[in-house]
Amino acid sequence: MTDNSLIEGLRDAVRHAQGDNAERVVSIVRVECPVDVKAVRMRMGLSQTEFADRFGFVLATLRNWEQGRRQPSGVNRNFLKVIEKLPNEVQKVLTA
Image 1: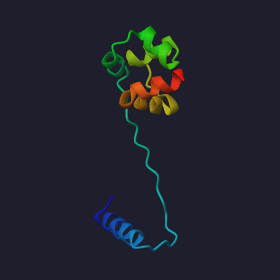
Image 2 (image 1 turned 45 degrees about the vertical axis):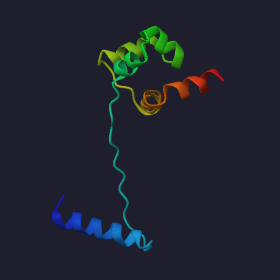
Image 3 (image 1 turned 90 degrees about the vertical axis):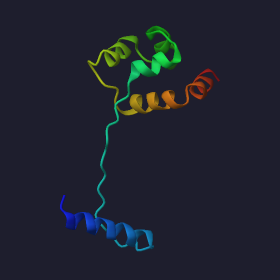
Image 4 (image 1 turned 60 degrees about the vertical axis):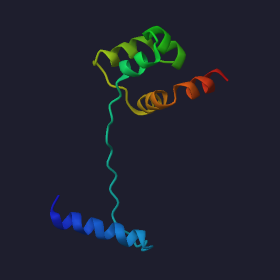
């Protein structure tokens, strides 16, 4: 990325903030944020079996994530992030 494209991007952002809604090219950048599944589980004090049962994961899949053979993606990654931040609330919703 050149300095000119950064400057033009900032100018575009300012124009947009000021209400200029002219058509422009929009780029979507996905940033993958890995989740340390084992750390999430350990903070909750749960065994792999308990964690998998409580939140509906397949035990073998959970083990693959924790051992680094696979990374959770999509919905599972997002669900794990919610579990990490709001474990009690997720538990309440799932048992309701």
